[in-house]
Image (cartoon, rainbow, N blue to C red; front, side, top):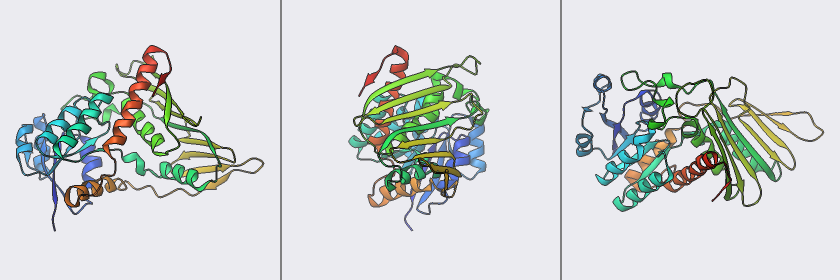
Length: 332
């Protein structure tokens, strides 16, 4: 059986706990080597059975067909471009970059190299998102008027980082930390994937809250107005223990309320709320991204997340940040 060999750039906990379990479920994809800047993580990679490289160029000189870039976001675009120019296909952990122009550079580098670049937007396979898409497509809501998407959590998840690098990097802007780039990009990507219209107007509010949990933002709201008047809102709040709900989608017939991945209700005028069945929660659903990536490498198929879509999401995030900084509405 023909396999694509995948090198890993950055052997953090997200690789161990999220990416490797998915990669192992794709028979035609083999994790074949690891580069990291810390001796502790390289030693762990060797213990896990991987060939360890302490120089990126040595990994890129090896026989890997592709690389996964899973470092902090501030280095994503630079590392992805270097790999592409060395003839490797690239999967980048989200966000693909910290700015739109950097994301566009990755896309252009892939085109120039004739290689595939894609982004790990795994939240496209979450059951709450799939239910939202299905509810809209079915027509049960009628004509959609607005969509609200929320992610509330308590803290940035900095404790998830490895201690041998910088355990606080998620709280530091210089690494690309913060609510907007961490979870805001997921929510904006999901909203754009609903395909409800073209974004024409962007309003943003991005703030660091008073509790001083680092220098990065921990509250971000993006309000997007579409060319047909539909309003989309994404809210990321790293200081909230409140139930969210995750989604509220209002139509001219009914409103969908998704409380969690396993609880959702349809509310219609004059009727009691009706519980809706949600899809199963699977930690392996995002293996589909790696299946598509391997197929694109080996058979010439399309990646699950085209770079154009990831670049479009970063354009919106740029405008959200600018709107917040300058206190004005931005136009696409």
